[in-house]
Image (cartoon, rainbow, N blue to C red):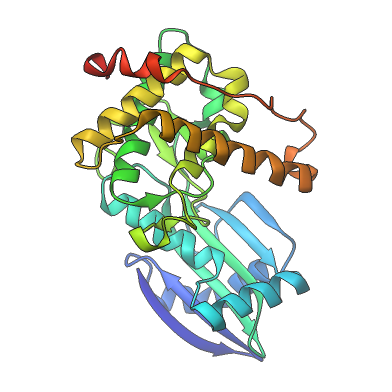
Length: 298
């Protein structure tokens, strides 16, 4: 992706765009893009500011958010969420994961504070959220195995998705016909909270966070047998990619701790439940049930 900074009216704009989006095209749509970035909150709305239909997220930054994101940028060099997500999605696609294709990330700055942001991605055609696609008894084992393999490969590459809830894991009608993710049905979106998790940052960005997030609500609607298929497939992918899990019992304990942390976050911010009942508190997979079938993992 290509990055550029420009001044527009009384604000400074940072633009991160796909190589197939021209600077002239962005310039011609700049007023509309800034309006989207500084307007009401967007969360998956469809629009076409650049002439093609895209999925938009972002909007005006609250005062606490403006201070928080600006401080993180100046103190640690952290990128704003839409820039981080665009680069993370690009990273996944370059490594042949199926993920939403980023088109443009725009941030609006005034007097050093982040005042608005916008991310445009191309729609993932024929996709449904994982929990909504979890219907066919015949397909459940295949989907569980693929999701486990993709997360295992992702983590073997030391990459944390960071927000691996079922709503951010999509299942498409058919495997990709070409390009990134060819032959796969599981696609990833909303990866703003993640990124490469190097060994030095391991304590602060544990990879088990992704599985803890997934099993937060999946423990309720994903049967234990399919959870075991997913975890066996994950372990197999970690081995095949040169980063095996040595101590399965400790690893499962770490997933349980990560899930408990996500539960505490929900207690602090119940609005994130969107009116749904809280997930069950308990979650456990017997380590012996994973060891017994290691040689038969998908």
